[in-house]
Amino acid sequence: MLEQRIQQQFFDSADLKYAAAEILAKPIADAVGAVVGCITAGGKVLACGNGGSASDAQHFAAEFVGRFERERPGLAAIALTTDTSILTAIGNDYDFNAVYSKQVQALGVPGDVLVAITTSGNSANVLAAVQAARAKEMTVIALTGRGGGKLRELLTETDVHICVPHERTARIQEVHILALHCICDAVDLQLLGEQENT
Image 1 (cartoon, rainbow, N blue to C red):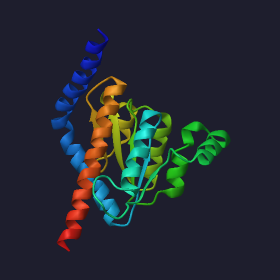
Image 2 (image 1 turned 135 degrees about the vertical axis):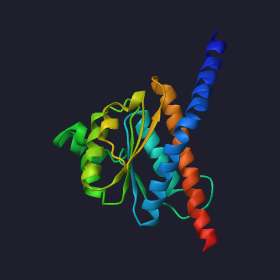
Image 3 (image 1 turned 90 degrees about the vertical axis):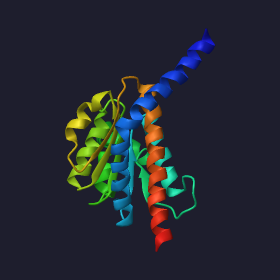
Image 4 (image 1 turned 180 degrees about the horizontal axis):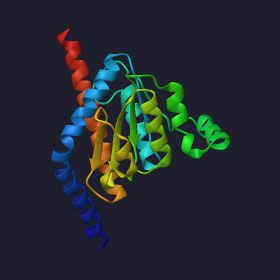
């Protein structure tokens, strides 16, 4: 019985990935375009989220600063989820909902990209970060599920929305990390292709 339940988890995850592949291919490609444009112009990527989405933000930044699968110079990326002194100072002195927006205000410049990850689309601190990014003339790449929640309403035509067509957090997160890996792979392909052609 337990083994069947475990197998079903695999099947459900695979089914969603098959279903999402066609739906998400274009927004993921659009995200790649936004990131490549940002990086080649000398900008940086900021990433944020809560819980498992915080881990995804850190994972994504690590793939950029270090490497994904191929050797290349490091790319400018910062996970806004990692500095405990900043997070606790802002949370204590202001509000937990400001822990990312204050960092976006301090670190973001026009042309930068914010990767905002929230499975519900309703995380208050992520929504505040998106509003701060808007004020800084940054592009937002939103990774959500469940229809996009309140975050969907904050996005403009220049932003990118990667919305996983599912309600369950675990399944949404599994597709989020795949989408982030797709972005890493395609960014490397674009940047290394440019280097090889020069």
